Image 1 (spheres, helix red, strand yellow):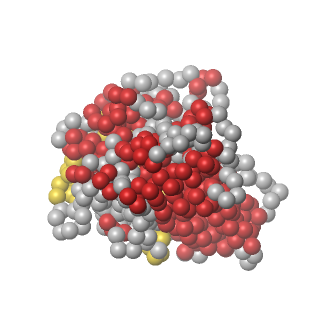
Image 2: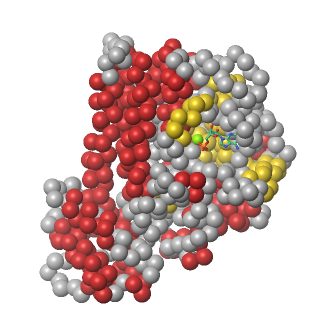
Image 3: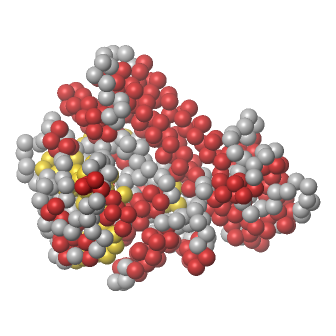
Length: 543
Ligand code: AMP
Ligand code: MG
């Protein structure tokens, strides 16, 4: 884009360059009453945020401020809090709530929609790309069903920090501009145990090129509204997949190409999640982004001790549908639901849709293999690597092992094949990863050392420069992730009136792949007090 866009430093929010193509190009709900109802034949409803008592900006992302071309100190202004707390709609905005449906925990749930998120519109960023600004927790909309349209500070801190942490890990995600407390109380029953209590309210301004979800297409499809379905697909391709837009290609083929691209992006995202140990927690089809971005940070969690069965979401505790180890399969299932929604657009020939969905397992498998071989310092994947990787997933379960520390510290294990090393010396660099060091003796130590010897032999079979190998491993195995207890500590402090830990964590998480000597504390494995504490190991959808 032009130099003028790049060079800007906006210090008046009425000068944000809005270009609201979503509301311009898609059909609006003609009814603008803000009352809960079914909305048909429309992609969105125009609705304004409900004002809050006393908006106050307690954290912001300097990178997103810069991306949007805002002056660095703009977040300090009262007007910033007014706008991003939902009290003032800036010039050029066109606030709306999106319509979408979804499968929740495997069952079709009908219309969902933005029940508490209100988009202000789309702003051109400093590179000339559209960025939708969306206020989560901005008050009720026609899609609020029985809920209040608000968000609590606890869940807003989690969303704010995790979106930025994921971005800095290099994982596709929605971003967060700001975290504004509202001065209002919001009542929540954290564990749905019949104990509702008031909590401080907050609004996060989320930022993404698009918030369109798989469920966006499912809703009109479920109602037989093929005209809206086709319009949504065409506009989504025009806006977000311009390389695919080709007037010479018929709709069935276009839809197939597009779905294939969505499948590949989804696979890439899930491979990244599996690498860092991110567990989304609620992979309903309304929480899958059409752009392959991680979206809707609710009861997510970070895998600490290696346990593929782990889910952070207590609402999912019985079925564990969204457990760490099942995320690849669940994403595939969700893609099948999206494909089903698109059937009306392919003239009775579902082959292009089937082929597109089939790209997912292939893309996931090859992405996973490449990722694992690289993170283990082996370079390109080789035939036969499946076996030691499978063995690794088993050996990591022999005692409680912090998987973040294990992978990170593996780079420090001596690899010279000509030097004889004892089991104890081989395992010494990994000692921080043991939650129960007293268990790492006898057979457990022998099993671990046995795998490390296999790993070492594979490293020795590559002729990589040792420094390059370690750098490659470090670039894929983060030292710092948003451990569940770290987020909870920041929340406890913020609820007590001190939000400084949020910014402190954001600073640490900005460089997750670097060892930061002064910040070793934030790389430590989960302390014992956090093992069973609500918010650390147990979360619900109540947010
Ligand atoms: P989620 O589980 O966060 O993906 O939300 C599922 C649906 O519930 C979406 O339509 C949300 O907009 C809606 N929702 C969640 N929390 C609230 C709330 N406090 N008020 C209104 N709608 C909500
Ligand atoms: Mg959602």
